[in-house]
Length: 504
Image 1 (cartoon, rainbow, N blue to C red):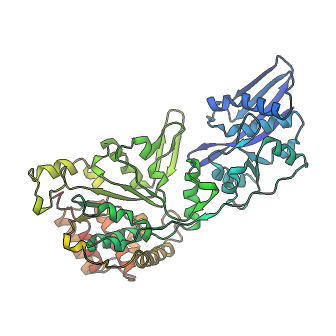
Image 2 (image 1 turned 90 degrees about the vertical axis):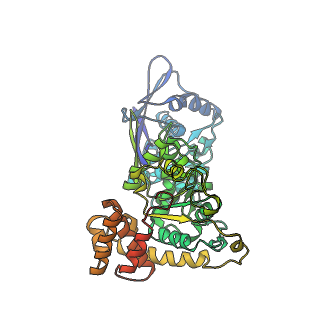
Image 3 (image 1 turned 30 degrees about the horizontal axis):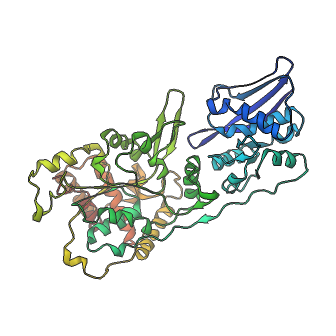
C-alpha cells in the first residue's frame, strides 16, 4: 500500500503542490528518494532515519521508496524532511493515512527530531488554503503562516509532537499570527535645508510612485533626501502587505513571523552583482528589485553600477515583474517598485558648481552620465538637479513642511488613485496607468494639449516620455485636489522631465 503526504515546491512566489508517496515493499533493505530531488532533498533520508531512531522507531528491513510527484518538477530545499517523515509514519501505520493527506507539510528535521524553521511558510499556507488543506510546519514558522486566516496551521516543535498530535495524545493548538511590526523612527524631511524644488519632486514621486533621478554635486543632499522618503510614504494596504511578505518569506526576512506595514526601502551597494539586483543564484531567489516590491529601490552612485546591471533594469521597470530564466525553470517575481537614483554630474562631481568648475567641461559629464543608456534614462519620470547648499543656509533653523504633513498629502493622493483604479487590479497608482486608462484620467483641455505638443516638439520627447509627463501631471493634479489636469500641472510635469544641466 502506498501512503501519501503533501508539500510544495517553490517557483518564484508560486507554491506548487507536490505529492510525497511512500511505499514499503519486500526486498533488500534500502531507502531511496526519487522525483528530481536536489542534494538537500536526497540527504533527507539520513535525517529522517536518525530522527525516527531518536523517537525509538526502527525502520523495517524492507525497501523504502519515496517518490516526489510530479517527477519532472525540480525539488529543492530542506523543507521536504517533514512530509517525507509523515508519509513514512503513515506507511508504518503509526499515524492515520487520512490525516497525512489532509495537511500540507514543510519543515527541516534535526537529528534529534526537532523541527527547524524554513523559508516560504507564508506562500505554503496560501497554497494549502487553495487546496482546502491545513498546514503543518515548525513552531517558529507558525506565526508567519497563521496570517493566512482561512486554513488551520499546526506548528510543532518536534516530530514527536507531530506524532502525539495526530494520534490524539497531546493535541497542538492552532498557531496565532505574529505581530504587526510598525516602522521605527523615521527621519524628518525638515532636516533637509533648502532644496525646496527637490523636496517638491520627492513628494510628487511618492504620491504617484514615479521613478526619479537626483543629479547634484557631492554633499548637496541627494542621499539625505532619499533617506527621508520612507517617512512620507503611506503604509502598505493589506493586499500589498501580503504580497510583499510572501517575497520576504521566501528570502527569510520576516522577523518572528511578523508582517510589516512599512513599505520596503532597499539600498544595494553599487558593487552588487546582477543576481543580487535582479534575482537568481542557487534556487533563483528574488533580488533587490523584487524585495522592493510595493516600496522603494534606492540606487546611490547610479552610474557606478555595472552596465549590465543597469540595462537589466529596463524590463522590470516597464512591466512590473522580472523573469529569471534558467535551464530547468523560468521563475517570475513581481517587482512594482519606485526607483530612486542619485548621481554626481561627472566623475569629479563638480561639473555644475561654478565655484569649483570641472576642468574637463563638458566631456567629463558626458562620459560619466553616458554610462546610463538613453533607453534607461527615458524610463525616469522625473529628473531633478540638486544644487549645492550655501553655508549660510546650513545655519538657518529647519523650515518647510514636516514628513508627517507631506505624508498626509501623499496618502490623500494615493487614496484618490486607489478609488480611481478599484476596478483594474493591475493598476494601483498613476505610474501604472497606460493606454485608454491614461487617456481617461489625464484628459487635457485645448491649452494643455497645445502646451504638451510644443514641449514634445521642443524637447524631442519620445512616446514613452510623452506618456510619463501625463502621468506626473495627473499626480500633481491629485495633490492639488483637482479632478482635471490643467496647464499649470502639465507645465510643472514638463519641467521635471527636462534633461539636467549635467546631461545637457
